[in-house]
Image (tube, rainbow, N blue to C red; front, side, top):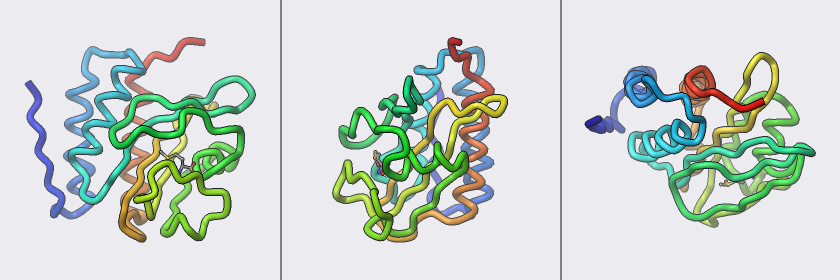
Length: 165
Ligand code: SME
């Protein structure tokens, strides 16, 4: 049984190195994208300080994003192409770090407690499969080290998971 080792006070690079090790253990021998997304979102939620939502949206026909496994309060199920922070990450094909969601035009407020957000695209061979989304109730909770760490998490998730099509 895997034991969580949350160390919210650890320096971020060390925290993310530890997280990636735990993810590798969770993904070992498992390639189901839903199972891996479920465990990844749980691990992120319980390992990172000051997050109120961690989860996945998957890209579907017409560029719509559809809710996947997550931890946190129930969230918007479908996000139309290009909408919100999640849609912006897909459109730009890059991570979007929003220090204050109140200042991001078009932000979709699933949980009114969310104040800052980090959305990282899931990529495989140049194609975008969806996004990994983290919300925090604190302003400017995420920085460049979080972005690098969560991009590495997204990469590990895609590498471990077998997507249909
Ligand atoms: N805030 C996101 C919507 C998803 S929730 O944060 C879970 C957005 O603006 O795209």
